[in-house]
Length: 305
Image 1 (tube, one colour):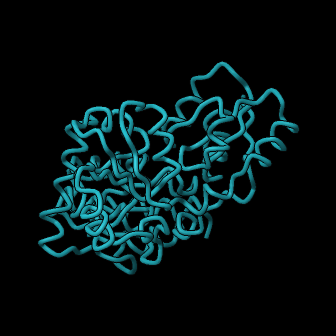
Image 2 (cartoon, helix red, strand yellow):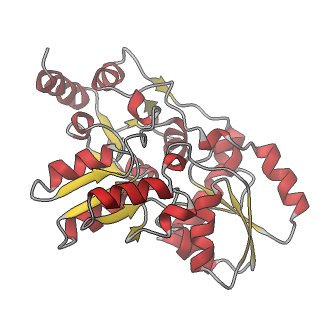
């Protein structure tokens, strides 16, 4: 069977079974082509709540499906590949956050969206890479406990000089692979290319970037920029997507090592099996978790837009 044949079967099955397919930006191009919506974890969760379908299928990782279920508890939420998790989301637990709250009672606890639904029950507000600066600036608290990604946190800190930050030493294993040496080598090969990176990268990398921002921000910048060459410092799937979107421009990975095995775990066959009921996993969350984890997410929507 060829790729387009399987895609046609998925398109037919999702129509017959009333399924909305949501794909994170780090999914492969063949999955993008069958998705109803493509975006970051927050954008997809919002789309899940808006979608008219009663079943939504998440092509991404578990915490994203949990966020969807939290925002639309009345819908059936499926995760295409049950093994697709996020290492960063597993770095902290609710108990750990509660202990940190006791140690820093004067801090507002700000959690990156890349965390479990259970952990979100113990925080004040959730943020994304695209909304973090705006939300932190809007908080009345002067002291911020930012979890779990210290690299994203320090990037936010530089843009919020009136706030005092405390960090947990967490982060994205995939983005941490990018180093200053990678930047220097990539620049030596492509001296005219603009460097676009995700703020989950190390400080030494973001400091050298022409643009640092969310995945959707990187995509937008590259598409709209008059420049013709770009070094991409985020999951390498974005290099391919930009090559499809802008064939008149050139895109290079900052490092060939910037590959997330969890994001790459989902295949087109997984999508087909999940849509037809032969695979995937339905996401269920305890009522108490649903009730409390939605509160910091709603606050994120109110403050971040």
